[in-house]
Length: 302
Ligand code: HEC
Image 1 (cartoon, rainbow, N blue to C red):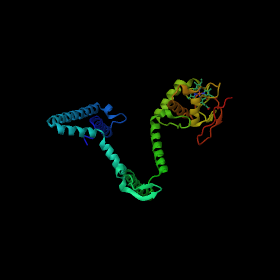
Image 2 (image 1 turned 90 degrees about the vertical axis):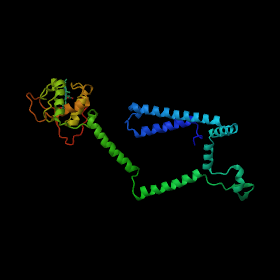
Image 3 (image 1 turned 180 degrees about the vertical axis):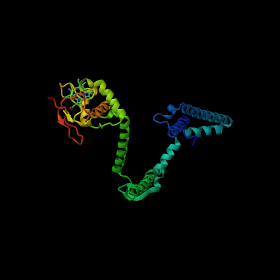
Image 4 (image 1 turned 30 degrees about the vertical axis):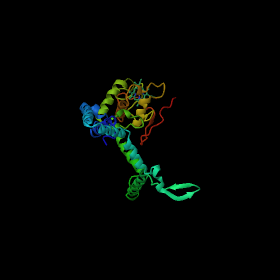
């Protein structure tokens, strides 16, 4: 085998096999192991060095041996070596895989059928074909048992499993990525931390028009159950995010507040419900009765 593959192929092949094995076995996360752990790089360099050294030593030994041979043996050795470099091994394997007789021997397998001078050769089926066929039979049997007898997951099941996993992952992700909320997905926050952040945001941005207790001024009263643009967390979030009717003075806050902040302040606004402000502004809009918390088309411009 050694003589069959020249060293300039042997060294890289062995090296990359070891390299691949290292990448496979060393758990280095997203990055390749040799970048994550510099010691791995050192190890690989050492391996390469040793491989080259082995080749050099064997080459040197061969040289020494060659000097000891007489002329005849030397010539024979070199011829042998020369031959092996021409990939005779590959060629032979290919021939074997093909399984056909060389043209010189075809006389042995020609059949007695003669159609207007066209004769039939009885070549063996190529082994690569025969073995692929056997493998496909085994595969079919395993497949049949697994999916038709033991009810393995079909594509639809697999899709559903993956979708379920993805949904769980998405939920997990949403928990950490609070800024993904919009008025379709927002839910009322009840956490005291969120509400006190909401209070801060309200006191910084909103009190000028809505008063600190939500009683209203330029903007409407936020404590009653009447809403001009729809109540419930989704509508309130949408009003804050997209603004009120044009010309009324309530701007779209999405340019200044993050989605998570708008969710906090919207939840804080809703915590005014049922409180009694010092100077309540007269109720405007309709009583909000939508129990299932759907979104109204509240961006009418009039
Ligand atoms: C410049 C004054 C002004 C500021 C500041 C302001 N608002 Fe308003 N807000 C208004 C006006 C005016 C309306 C009524 C809009 C309309 O009629 O379309 C309104 C409407 C609303 C509504 C809808 C009320 C309803 O009845 O449907 C909510 C909720 C609201 N504001 C919350 C906020 C929040 C939260 C902030 C701070 C981030 C804020 N507003 C800042 C003026 C303001």
